[in-house]
Length: 96
Length: 96
DNA sequence: CTAATATATGAATAAGAATGCATAAAAGGC
DNA sequence: GCCTTTTATGCATTCTTATTCATATATTAG
Image (cartoon, rainbow over the protein chains, first blue to last red):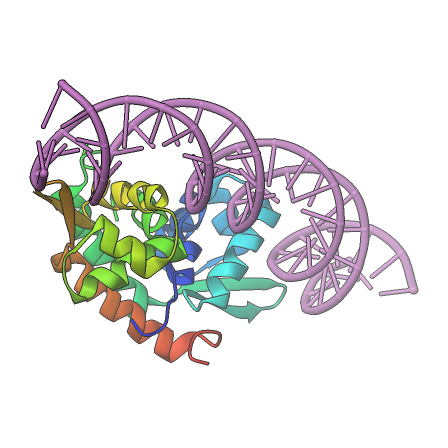
């Protein structure tokens, strides 16, 4: 990497944000719907979504007073596949 | 992802650890050599290397009193390529 | 225009993790 | 066996970041 963008990984480095990413793998969701699934404060979800959006991991579409977020699958899908592969092969904790 | 392994990203989420990864992209290095390149305490590098090794991002080989670390390219190479692609396309900060 | 719903923003706190120092352990040279 | 080199470990401190609360903004309904 030319660009020392550890920010890429920082942005994904919490359970909440990965929970959000996983929720969005199924399809676009509003902030409210996401909040219901991940079980934390709405404002917390907002903060997380904004940081994910800043790095273009998710994208927001206005829909009336709702904001519907969807995953940047172009980037995320292949990376998540790779991660899963690695975890399956190497991670002692995770493969339980 | 079935496995909620945000630990995957946590482990890569600091400048130091990414500096180490980048140094190792060229080829295996001892702790000392790595330390020279990244410009922090040796023990700090040790700590970072251990956490990288725990997640199998790097691997250590004993060589006398040295420990030579090398990158798990199988996992890291494709992921780093993807990250670079994403950054080039989306990251405003990073593409300067 | 007022009330209600949906989301974002800012500031304070709390939590967690990185870093560095001091020390230990392991290996090799003399 | 002792000293030197290399790396690791444990603990204390310092940073950083996530989270929450309180508040603001925006949109729609009535």
